[in-house]
Length: 176
Image (cartoon, rainbow, N blue to C red; front, side, top):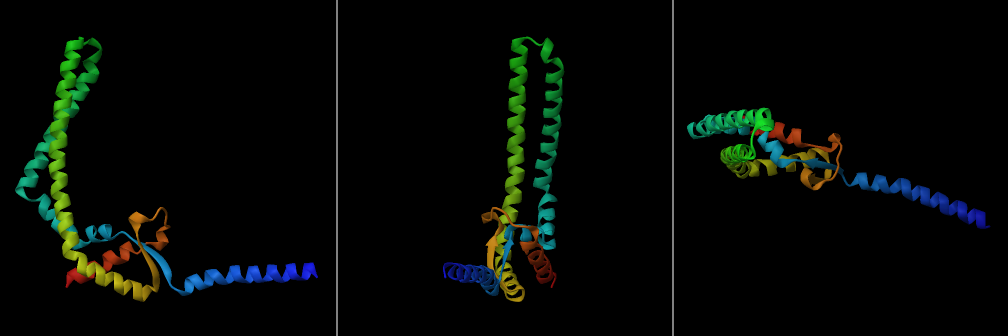
Protein backbone atom coordinates (compact mmCIF):
# COMPACT_ATOMS: atom_id res chain seq x y z
CA UNK A 1 0.00 0.00 0.00
CA UNK A 2 2.77 2.40 0.98
CA UNK A 3 4.70 1.74 -2.23
CA UNK A 4 1.57 2.38 -4.35
CA UNK A 5 1.03 5.75 -2.64
CA UNK A 6 4.71 6.53 -3.08
CA UNK A 7 4.54 5.68 -6.81
CA UNK A 8 1.40 7.78 -7.29
CA UNK A 9 3.03 10.68 -5.44
CA UNK A 10 6.18 10.39 -7.58
CA UNK A 11 4.12 10.32 -10.78
CA UNK A 12 2.15 13.38 -9.61
CA UNK A 13 5.36 15.26 -8.78
CA UNK A 14 6.97 14.40 -12.15
CA UNK A 15 3.79 15.44 -13.97
CA UNK A 16 3.66 18.72 -12.05
CA UNK A 17 7.36 19.39 -12.66
CA UNK A 18 6.89 18.85 -16.39
CA UNK A 19 3.73 20.98 -16.48
CA UNK A 20 5.10 24.07 -14.67
CA UNK A 21 7.68 25.03 -17.31
CA UNK A 22 4.99 24.66 -19.97
CA UNK A 23 2.74 26.97 -17.98
CA UNK A 24 5.52 29.55 -17.73
CA UNK A 25 6.19 29.48 -21.47
CA UNK A 26 2.49 29.71 -22.22
CA UNK A 27 2.53 33.21 -20.73
CA UNK A 28 5.21 34.42 -23.16
CA UNK A 29 8.91 34.30 -23.56
CA UNK A 30 11.53 36.24 -21.66
CA UNK A 31 13.77 38.77 -23.39
CA UNK A 32 16.34 41.40 -22.47
CA UNK A 33 17.10 44.71 -24.14
CA UNK A 34 19.74 47.38 -23.76
CA UNK A 35 17.72 50.45 -24.74
CA UNK A 36 20.66 52.86 -24.62
CA UNK A 37 22.79 50.61 -26.81
CA UNK A 38 19.96 50.06 -29.28
CA UNK A 39 19.54 53.84 -29.64
CA UNK A 40 23.22 54.71 -29.83
CA UNK A 41 23.85 52.06 -32.50
CA UNK A 42 21.25 53.48 -34.87
CA UNK A 43 22.38 55.21 -38.04
CA UNK A 44 20.64 58.39 -36.84
CA UNK A 45 22.56 58.41 -33.53
CA UNK A 46 25.85 57.67 -35.25
CA UNK A 47 25.25 60.64 -37.57
CA UNK A 48 24.47 62.93 -34.60
CA UNK A 49 27.63 61.79 -32.79
CA UNK A 50 29.69 62.28 -35.96
CA UNK A 51 28.23 65.78 -36.32
CA UNK A 52 29.32 66.57 -32.75
CA UNK A 53 32.80 65.18 -33.39
CA UNK A 54 33.06 67.41 -36.48
CA UNK A 55 32.11 70.49 -34.43
CA UNK A 56 35.02 72.97 -34.27
CA UNK A 57 35.01 73.14 -30.45
CA UNK A 58 35.08 69.35 -30.20
CA UNK A 59 37.86 69.11 -32.79
CA UNK A 60 39.87 71.72 -30.89
CA UNK A 61 39.49 69.79 -27.63
CA UNK A 62 40.37 66.52 -29.39
CA UNK A 63 43.50 68.08 -30.87
CA UNK A 64 44.47 69.36 -27.42
CA UNK A 65 43.82 65.90 -25.94
CA UNK A 66 46.03 64.25 -28.57
CA UNK A 67 48.82 66.79 -27.95
CA UNK A 68 48.64 66.34 -24.16
CA UNK A 69 48.58 62.55 -24.52
CA UNK A 70 51.71 62.64 -26.68
CA UNK A 71 53.49 64.96 -24.21
CA UNK A 72 52.44 62.75 -21.29
CA UNK A 73 53.72 59.62 -23.04
CA UNK A 74 57.03 61.34 -23.78
CA UNK A 75 57.40 62.43 -20.15
CA UNK A 76 56.67 58.90 -18.93
CA UNK A 77 59.20 57.40 -21.34
CA UNK A 78 61.87 59.95 -20.34
CA UNK A 79 61.19 59.38 -16.63
CA UNK A 80 61.40 55.60 -17.02
CA UNK A 81 64.64 55.91 -18.96
CA UNK A 82 66.33 58.43 -16.64
CA UNK A 83 64.85 57.57 -13.24
CA UNK A 84 67.82 55.47 -12.17
CA UNK A 85 70.27 58.35 -12.61
CA UNK A 86 68.02 61.15 -11.31
CA UNK A 87 68.44 62.71 -7.89
CA UNK A 88 65.48 62.61 -5.53
CA UNK A 89 64.74 66.26 -6.26
CA UNK A 90 64.78 65.59 -10.00
CA UNK A 91 62.49 62.59 -9.54
CA UNK A 92 60.08 64.65 -7.46
CA UNK A 93 60.05 67.39 -10.10
CA UNK A 94 59.49 64.82 -12.88
CA UNK A 95 56.63 63.23 -10.92
CA UNK A 96 55.09 66.67 -10.34
CA UNK A 97 55.22 67.41 -14.09
CA UNK A 98 53.69 63.99 -14.83
CA UNK A 99 50.88 64.59 -12.33
CA UNK A 100 50.21 68.04 -13.76
CA UNK A 101 50.15 66.75 -17.34
CA UNK A 102 47.89 63.86 -16.30
CA UNK A 103 45.48 66.29 -14.63
CA UNK A 104 45.38 68.40 -17.81
CA UNK A 105 44.80 65.27 -19.87
CA UNK A 106 41.97 64.09 -17.61
CA UNK A 107 40.34 67.53 -17.73
CA UNK A 108 40.26 67.62 -21.54
CA UNK A 109 39.15 63.97 -21.70
CA UNK A 110 36.32 64.84 -19.31
CA UNK A 111 35.22 67.71 -21.55
CA UNK A 112 35.12 65.40 -24.58
CA UNK A 113 33.25 62.72 -22.66
CA UNK A 114 30.74 65.26 -21.32
CA UNK A 115 29.99 66.52 -24.83
CA UNK A 116 29.36 62.98 -26.08
CA UNK A 117 27.20 62.17 -23.05
CA UNK A 118 25.12 65.30 -23.67
CA UNK A 119 24.52 64.23 -27.27
CA UNK A 120 23.68 60.72 -26.08
CA UNK A 121 21.23 62.02 -23.48
CA UNK A 122 19.54 64.26 -26.05
CA UNK A 123 19.22 61.25 -28.37
CA UNK A 124 17.69 59.14 -25.61
CA UNK A 125 15.10 61.82 -24.92
CA UNK A 126 14.38 62.46 -28.60
CA UNK A 127 14.04 58.82 -29.56
CA UNK A 128 12.20 57.63 -26.46
CA UNK A 129 8.69 57.70 -28.02
CA UNK A 130 9.87 55.63 -31.01
CA UNK A 131 11.64 53.19 -28.70
CA UNK A 132 8.46 52.66 -26.70
CA UNK A 133 6.51 52.04 -29.90
CA UNK A 134 9.12 49.60 -31.23
CA UNK A 135 9.22 47.74 -27.92
CA UNK A 136 5.43 47.39 -27.88
CA UNK A 137 5.51 46.03 -31.45
CA UNK A 138 8.24 43.52 -30.60
CA UNK A 139 6.46 42.43 -27.42
CA UNK A 140 3.35 41.69 -29.46
CA UNK A 141 5.01 40.06 -32.50
CA UNK A 142 7.59 38.05 -30.53
CA UNK A 143 5.15 36.95 -27.82
CA UNK A 144 7.30 38.39 -25.06
CA UNK A 145 5.78 37.95 -21.61
CA UNK A 146 8.66 39.45 -19.63
CA UNK A 147 11.06 42.12 -20.95
CA UNK A 148 14.02 43.10 -18.79
CA UNK A 149 16.52 45.95 -19.12
CA UNK A 150 19.97 44.42 -19.73
CA UNK A 151 21.54 46.42 -16.91
CA UNK A 152 19.33 44.76 -14.31
CA UNK A 153 20.11 41.21 -15.41
CA UNK A 154 23.09 39.31 -14.03
CA UNK A 155 23.28 36.88 -16.94
CA UNK A 156 21.40 36.32 -20.15
CA UNK A 157 22.50 34.34 -23.19
CA UNK A 158 22.66 36.34 -26.41
CA UNK A 159 19.56 34.53 -27.66
CA UNK A 160 17.44 36.43 -25.13
CA UNK A 161 18.53 39.85 -26.39
CA UNK A 162 16.30 41.87 -28.70
CA UNK A 163 18.63 44.89 -28.73
CA UNK A 164 19.66 44.39 -32.37
CA UNK A 165 16.01 44.04 -33.41
CA UNK A 166 15.17 47.31 -31.66
CA UNK A 167 18.08 49.03 -33.43
CA UNK A 168 16.94 47.69 -36.81
CA UNK A 169 13.37 48.87 -36.28
CA UNK A 170 14.59 52.30 -35.11
CA UNK A 171 16.78 52.55 -38.22
CA UNK A 172 13.67 51.86 -40.31
CA UNK A 173 11.61 54.42 -38.39
CA UNK A 174 14.22 57.18 -38.74
CA UNK A 175 14.94 56.40 -42.39
CA UNK A 176 11.45 57.57 -43.33
